[in-house]
Image 1 (cartoon, helix red, strand yellow):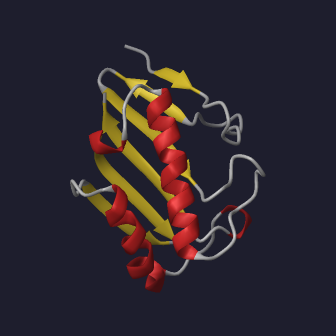
Image 2: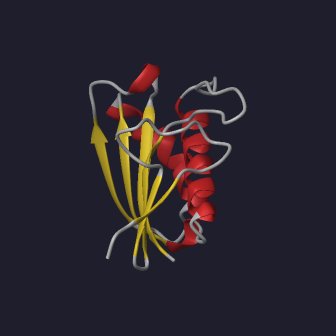
Image 3: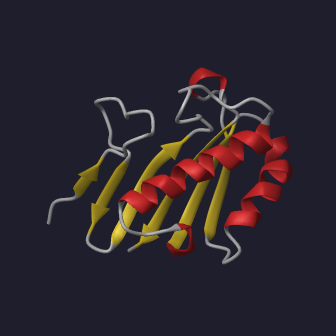
Length: 125
């Protein structure tokens, strides 16, 4: 079985090395999403909470394109450039993921274009 690949209209396109969404059977894999405003193509202003909200909104758009939603997310990976911001990110995160999917949070040295957080998920259909 080969995965079905989706590029999501309205989101910044993935580069040629990966896809925004990959579907294999009943699983949907969403590549890491940043807090990029789909209209401007730039990171949203305002810090970790605004970037977290926008990244999750971008994840939700990817899931919708694959025929699923945030409530079907089973696993979330968070990558933060300053792990001390995890509490502030979690304040936004819990508004979206009340069902408490499995989660990993990792501190990283750097993300694209100065982003503070990147979020990837695995969901069911």
